Amino acid sequence: MTNLADLADLVPIQVWEGVVARRVAGERLTVAVVELAPNAIVPEHRHANEQCGLVIEGEVTFRVGDEERVLGPGGSWRIVGDTPHSVVTGPDGAVVVDVFALARDDWNDRPVVGSPDAPVRPLWPRGR
Image (cartoon, rainbow, N blue to C red):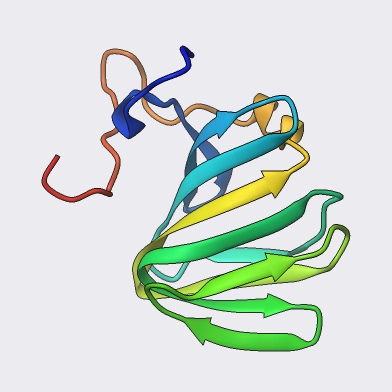
């Protein structure tokens, strides 16, 4: 990737079933636009990376440790590294932005969605 790119030029990867991310990664952080299918489930997990994010479209039920909340557009989260968390989307799915520090190097081996001959367009921004 060059230093500048359009979201549609970023390679989509499957992070979980029904969860596709397009990411920009540096040496110490990853920024991802993540598309979650309707009723997608991100099971409880944890990682060493600190994570912050916000909802762009749709609705997610986010659980961080013992705290659970439904978040819509503009809702945000902050997760300290190694804290268990999970996400469930509503019936319309969601688009969120996630920021991770340190970079999510574990995503490097995730499967690519689509192919150069059949690119998958991002759901957001609409109309592009």
